[in-house]
Length: 285
Image (tube, rainbow, N blue to C red; front, side, top):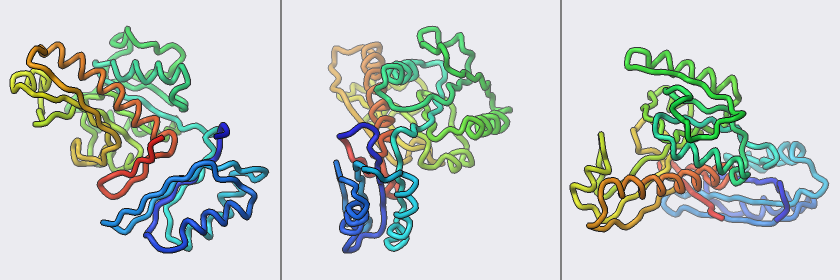
């Protein structure tokens, strides 16, 4: 697969001729399909597709303009993007820094193809002494119950000012208001612990240990107004033994959270995640 090959993603009501129309459009412009994935959701009657292609001599702007009639004919929601135009990502974190540190490391070694628009926290930069924030714009936006709306207004202004495309809550321990969650629909990814059974509130790993759980896990999902109930992008689990102490669960939990969030973000950066109502379609690599 060639570097920086354009990516076309689309979703629409399922009907005959969608794949033929997309293929014909690309073939007529001397584009060569390098990878194609599709899914028909029989329950909702929706169709989803991701196509990576060699554009030849065609420019992405020209292809976008030419694809407009095809998209309109099939009532598509679609994007066509050159990966050279990297997404701008804002990372939010509170005191817990393992997910933030992991994302920054993966970005520095170019595993995550993104531009870091900003790192934002409700705690001062000194909190993150284990994180390499050198060269990154850091913003301290403290918050309390009394100032939550004002802090969110500052955050939203910063998102617009930095032209942020994707917001990642890397263990950001603040619940977004319904208003901000609505503004960030399909653009904000959260990571949280996910157990069976579920444990809410303080010290979840201690609660899990007290109940003798056999499996712990983590979920990465889009943020919505329903707390921790947005469309799920990725999940993972790990077996737990009766020998494990709460400290062991915390250590294992950190590892799961890091890898789940990193996978979810990478898939989003590569245009592999499409919304399907309260669920997602993820065209994994």
